[in-house]
Length: 153
Image (cartoon, rainbow, N blue to C red):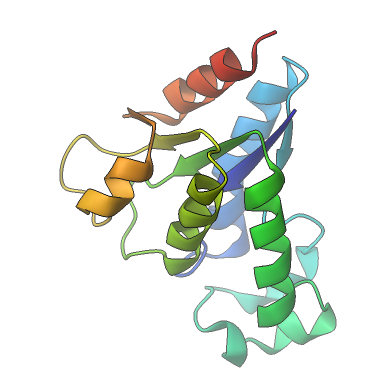
């Protein structure tokens, strides 16, 4: 049972982009659910500081998995092979194009999408995007719980 953890990376540093993912991973692992992070095995990216334009971050050149083509291929594969896409858009400061693509990829396969997002005022409010989200909840904990329920045997 794989869950892909989608959410903003650009505009955050490594810790800011991975802290909620680690929290979700710890919670879901209690139920035998494995998670996939787009930043797994990419600790060398800690030296980037705040993520901006991938083509300008030379630390990405240290791994083919963190270069633009490599991360696109891996993230698309993850978003299309997972059983549930868990998205965290809470407090997003700008539209996260990568996350929007991951939502579209998962939706194209009919994968359930669970999203933690504010009830109003999130920058991602868009009719098409919100239509693809099957479960919209206001907290990460609730998103994890809905995910757990979807995958319960």
